[in-house]
Amino acid sequence: MASEAVVLTVDGPHGARDVRISSPGRILWPEPGITKLDLARYLVDVGAAFVAANGDRPLSLQRFPDGIDGEQFFSKNPPKGAPDFVRSVMVVYPSGRTHPQLVIDEPAAAVWAVQMNTVVFHPWPSRAENSDNPDELRIDLDPQPGTDFDDAIPAALELRSLLAEVGLTAFVKTSGSRGLHVFAPIEPTHEFLEVRHAVIAAVRELERRMPERVTTAWWKEERGERIFLDFNQANRDRTMAGAYSPRAIAHAPVSCPLEWHELENADPKSFTIATVPERLATVGDPWAGMHAQSGTIDELLGWWARDAAAGLGELPFPPDFPKMPGEPPRVQPSRARKGG
Image 1 (cartoon, one colour):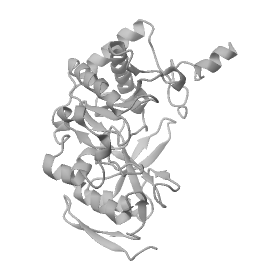
Image 2 (tube, rainbow, N blue to C red):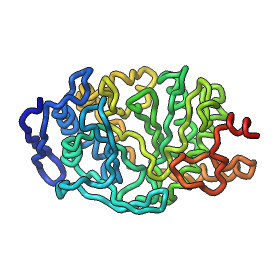
Image 3 (spheres, helix red, strand yellow):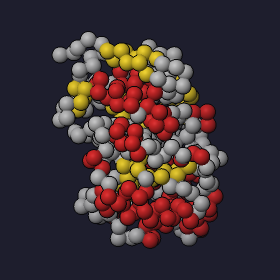
Image 4 (tube, helix red, strand yellow):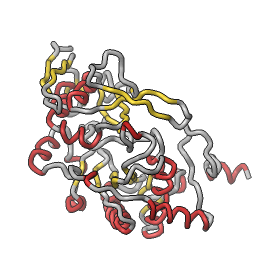
């Protein structure tokens, strides 16, 4: 049964704001019994770090009106009735269509999103005022069947070293599920397709160094028991759960930034809505200085050009994208063989 609304006072850069949470007792995560109010309070507790990581970016809200086991949908533009401290910015989607996209600038806006039944926050890798040029290079290390989180750790460590070779400083976080996300701050001087090519160059090199452990194979039937290096997360309007964002998984995990020295002994299941606020208060935010200094993707683009000259060109795009120049056929390899 829904209970009476609760008003939370949320501190921020423009002073305290009151945010109303209706149906505060609604259960979002049935297994641990976490409510809508619990989630709102979590965003209050981690608000500054959350906004530092996800603020000033086009953002999609993954909303669950009836909890994580119910229906879900994505919101990109601010819903009607959004408070005046929640803004939007016009962005261009892969289709060429333009549309306003939500932007969060302060913790109160994240708490308001919880009022709208948001569970997962998906930020773009670019800033609101320069949305065509990412300022983060992002690589998703996705364990495939037969592998797990521990298998992603050596791949992430080697990827860190590889990025350092080209002048990029890598940061790592748990995905909130079984994988890892590796980010590197970059100068926002290249548009999405060029950043995608830099990512492809990086993951191809990692695959050369760890062929038995990682793969860039887009088709699942070709991946085997390896970590998939998801290059397509570098595309326009493709996002992953942001730092400190909860995930819609039974035990209420959080996509949690880590120090590199923590990684080898990390248990991703231990980073939850219940535990991360205390961790942040005692350990601090490992990503606090991420954008203090940015690198360039110039050397990676040199690798891309080298590989392209050797016959290694474009890789498949997501199925909802228009057909892209140089893209290989969008047909499953086994079906292509049967058709041949």
